[in-house]
Image (tube, rainbow, N blue to C red; front, top):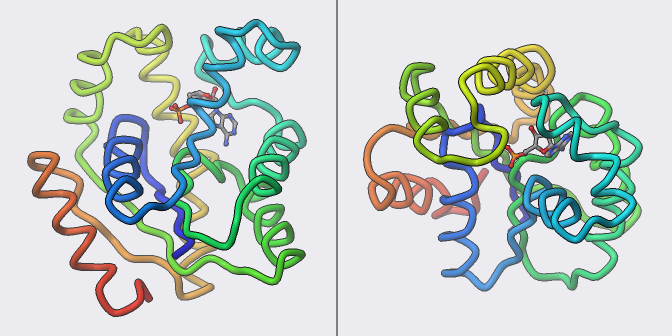
Length: 185
Ligand code: AMP
């Protein structure tokens, strides 16, 4: 199955995607992790992306689409879960094109939700470089302005399934697995 996990920063997309992929033998594609790895290794991409990430802004669509194209190239027919990508309408359209070129398409888009207060608490408890109070606030705004509109884009495609992202990790994972029974559509 080819899935996208959508939701605000801190909602648990990464944790849930990792658990699901481990169970199913799918590939977890986290653009945030790919970028942070590039920053650590001080690659040209990492050097360019670091400031953007630290500010809580978005890395450019062309760069991100190039990254995803590369990632997909190394991938077989097995399933994947994308977490943190796409984040803008241009990325969503680009992803559709990339998949179409491969004769593939998304099976579902899971939208995880949690109240803003809970997101903020989780993010501030995480201790990542870009998890300062100011950056967290900014990233939530960036999510609302750039990424939340993708829900409509994927709703129009009939792909959206909502997941309550509150509660403990196992509980949320159970909700996701129940949703996926029957093909995820
Ligand atoms: P994440 O781990 O998904 O919260 O991503 C951490 C940071 O990496 C984001 O705040 C952005 O600066 C950058 N980033 C990750 N994925 C994307 C994307 N699809 N488009 C633009 N920037 C991204």
